[in-house]
Length: 403
Ligand SMILES: [Zn+2]
Image (cartoon, rainbow, N blue to C red; front, side, top):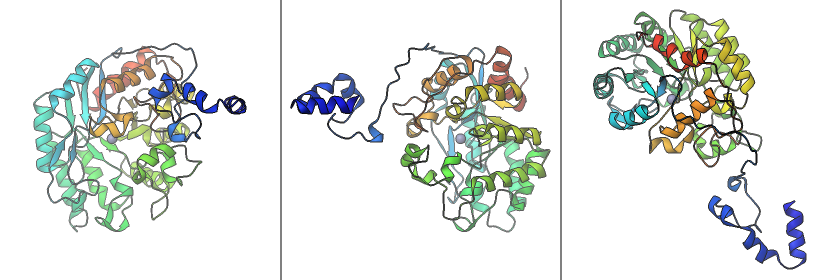
């Protein structure tokens, strides 16, 4: 044991010399602190001593449609407070296509396309310029929410977005966790607020799937203390914590979401991030059983699925027609702050390894420290039939593509 060794060395007055010697090339390279100083959690970089199979999966066994990417974003931000509705581009179509072509990604759904002029701009530069490769979605006009005519304006905006070529409606956790009665002021607006009913109904009327993401990992709703399994991640992104203040609990949000699902049975919902509760597959399964209008995608949650590979494998088997491949990819440099979703070759290879192999105990993100929590994952080795559905067949149906 290290401590014994250290005290033994100290006894012989060799501590300092040996500590320096012990900090060899390996420690140097990993950025370990000097051996005679206490080790902080943030400096801990354990390397697995398991001798297990390592499979590199550079390309997927079948073509992939990634239904969860962010190549554009609305400048208004989470509350949509900006006066214009412009979008910004995270990457050029050319750069995106280079990664897609190398990694066997046939098409991507670009969720955050904004609305109005911004949406048209995004669709022009991506969907129209490269037909069949990009499918851009519209977003609600959060900035107009406090106007009395909002419910109808929003329904009309959906119709306009469809005419402009939008392929879905993306609802960010702005709804439930950021949007307040008067924009940034007042009480939080509830997920099942009736003023959104015309929007959900307009989506159904125009066969527009709704990509919904209204709650985050369960740990984001708990205190950031030594028991929080996402302590590192919340340390890097303190504004992702929804504990305390006037935030609703995780369960309250999910119940409100379920009331929306129940009230709009003709609207098709894609519950992003494994229905926002990859930690609780029994609950997600129950939701899928209760609501035929609910489907899910995988974005940024293979870290959760891969640490419960047996339950995940069963989940894939049971719901194989209702699961879409998605990564939540954000191009660099933006994406670098969230390695579990950085749009690059390595990220796709990890997803393919997780879905296709039975490899054990590997990193779920391209990063020196597992960014969402300090654990590793196991592959689920899906059979070809299920793999094909998850990789592109289900998404092909969702997007109305011909087989
Ligand atoms: Zn996303």
